[in-house]
Length: 358
Ligand code: AMP
Ligand code: MG
Image 1 (cartoon, rainbow, N blue to C red):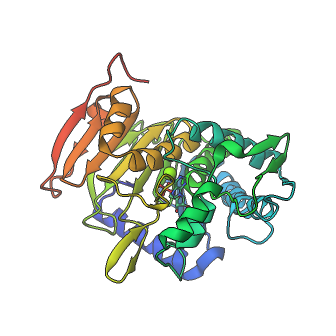
Image 2 (tube, rainbow, N blue to C red):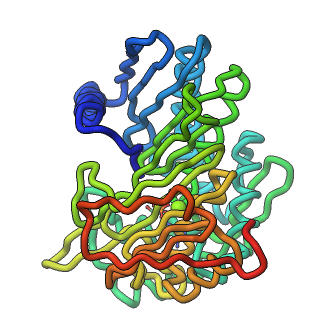
């Protein structure tokens, strides 16, 4: 997801992107725009680019706090950070578990209760599989079936025990990987910080997971671009308005590894242990709660088109592009949804909710 831009503004955004990448994790560029009220910031967190745009006197301070909060959040939740809550819980699997911060315990509780609704498509305890495949690492590999057979029983969200802030993974070798929910949940952390600072108008993009608070000061809503998987670097298929909600996107095209000429995507089907074979190209889910949006984007991708369309007919707001170029859009988004004229070859279908939207 990207915020839709004019060419000049797109170039400005691109500069911010390049700066952030060059300056790496320490980068935090902030610049007041001409009217003195709009501010933007770019940094790296959770292995991805984070851009913010906020308005009003408290904007800069709020964005700084957001960047600090995201760094602390990553330190707690990353599977790859030494001493993170997640690493400690994973290391203590089968050995009595470990104590985590109340925030981590709360997110794990929420994730597990969502995961229980995924019909086996989403697993917070997917780490044994994601680590074995290493799709997002420097050393991806094809995991042989015999190894998958030993790993699959370790992916078992129902077996997790959370007692207060004590989290136990009962079997050795089990492990959490919150990559499927973390960036969306982080959007809601930003939302809370904007709120606490009295910022009424703000936008944050955490690696394609976007939250927009309120409208721009001129009363116009933030316009979000639905990224075009065939034309990377900011091109979008369509735009839509987003207000006080998060849109999270999942797709096989953004993160994958190529091994022996074949593509392996980073979303794993917990039922097979292999990269998900979905008939969905990319799917965005819009929800007030960021963790929910992110959870559903991953889940809908693994579910595949038919089950995902059922979710939309049940009132879930989503934008779904299948592998044949069909673009399914929830009726609730129709008023603000605009196809990009340059993005040809897509067939647009609106999906109505049976019995109203939620
Ligand atoms: P997303 O980009 O939100 O769809 O999340 C993908 C990330 O979630 C991967 O990089 C893994 O860290 C993790 N993941 C992969 N497959 C699953 C799954 N089936 N359930 C939960 N998390 C997953
Ligand atoms: Mg997700």
